[in-house]
Image (cartoon, rainbow, N blue to C red; front, top):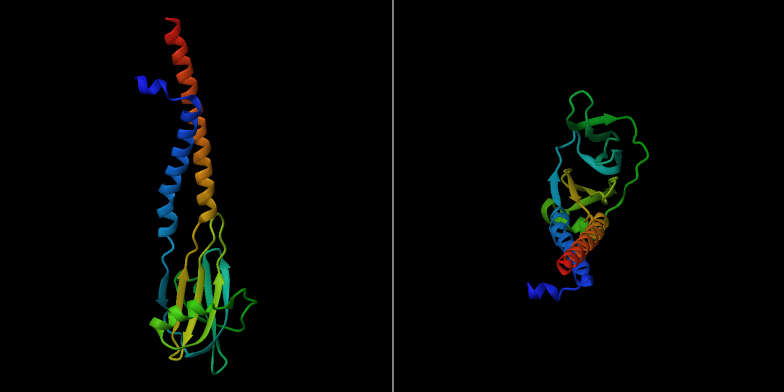
Length: 191
């Protein structure tokens, strides 16, 4: 009990604040960075062999639909079929304006190690709310196969917000403990 008498009020408040902030920091650290595993998937073959990727449509927040054109000029989109609810290839008349960009060299190299020689590659960042959304990369190989490479982005913004909020909670708890300690000391000194 004598050791507790040496603990000052600022030490209690600071200790609780740091304990909560560091605890939250360490607790969420693994969760945010474990979610950053990439995935590489070969999409089903289109009805005709694609010659180029002409764009990537983003119809919803976490959805991307690659659009390819064949040597004969036909255009196909890989996306959700309204009737069946599953993703499949569908021929379309023309592609809508898309928001995709050229692939980064590192993404193209990552895909090429599994897929083979790449003749076309396009990327798009999906839309997100609290955290940055994944970046989807679509690569077309010489064989006419289309590959999807999804790379989730770490959620550092909300990670820091949670750590800050935990620090505030620790400050609040430390203040309450300091007040209880003060009241307890006063009541033991009176009697």
